Length: 293
Image (cartoon, rainbow, N blue to C red):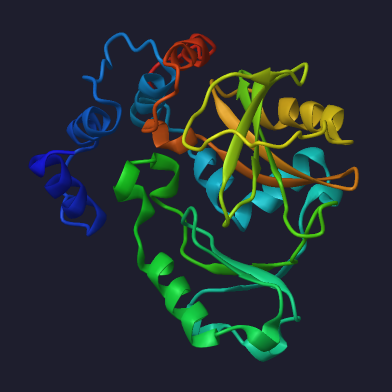
């Protein structure tokens, strides 16, 4: 990044550009991160089309779908309560959390944000003050203004606690993230070694490894097709129906499938594909709707 780009991103991260209209803001961010001018009149690539969708595909139900508390009922109504990770508690403020009443293992997250987690594997060793500090940081962050992901703009800030879960590895919970287009999953990636040395491996729907990277390196280990793969495919079709593009995430715990989250803008459309041809290939799968804004 040059001096202007570094300065722009510093101001953006600290909320000094919240006043800026969405379109010019996204045009500058796209140029900084992707290195190209953003074409909103005739977008072709996946990352370009995600910026278009941020601006022009704005449906009220999207807000509920990114709210980490409200989405559970939304998803349960469509595929069943058995796919939902149990909620232990929900609070309006960090100060309301009674850590004494939480179990020995749990996960805390803010409902209106993305990425901020407190994962507790053993409460006896948890630094509660540090956990509160981290949660307050993400609670006070207005995530919408950072990447202009419209669905997050009106989500009510809360904190939820969920049951801590691990998969067959006994140490982690791999994510299976399906890229869906008008109700049809076309590809997925598996996230492994989260919090250690995160790796992303992309697969087609026949579970053939796709030879590209996006954000993280590929894993150097063989990943087996999960027991619940076909079920995840079926569920992703239900949850993505009627939307030009959405990513639906799941976990597989010894063949038992759990819903993770719904993501409208993978990497917010600001991370290049290497090689670039895959950005264009994913982009061809998105049929842009009529503008709603």
